[in-house]
Amino acid sequence: MGALLARARGGVVICDVGGLGPPGLRHVELLARLQLTARRAGGRIRLRDADPALYALLDLVGLRFEAEGEVEEREPALGVEEEVEPGDAAV
Image 1 (tube, rainbow, N blue to C red):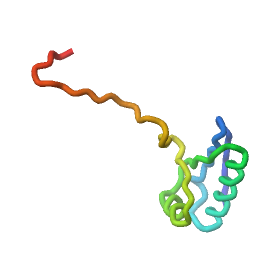
Image 2: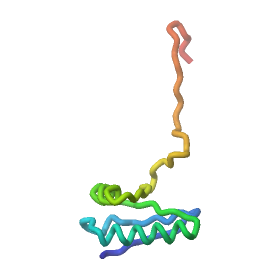
Image 3: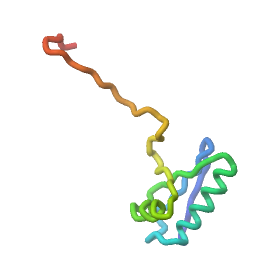
Image 4: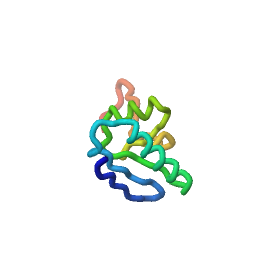
């Protein structure tokens, strides 16, 4: 199946799935089992270097995994929005 590297960081397990090759149901089963184990231990899984086809297959069976570096839904996006009125002095 290829090497599946994982490391825990703050309750998050990072799984490098870049070298798994074409995704199949065996990958879905493995990731589902890993996710279940992580959740039972109070953690979660993030995927690194996943093929878009793997995400499509996981979505098809109803599984959702975060990608490493993905902004979590509960975190506010960073950035500043500012309105400029005509006639405002440049700073």
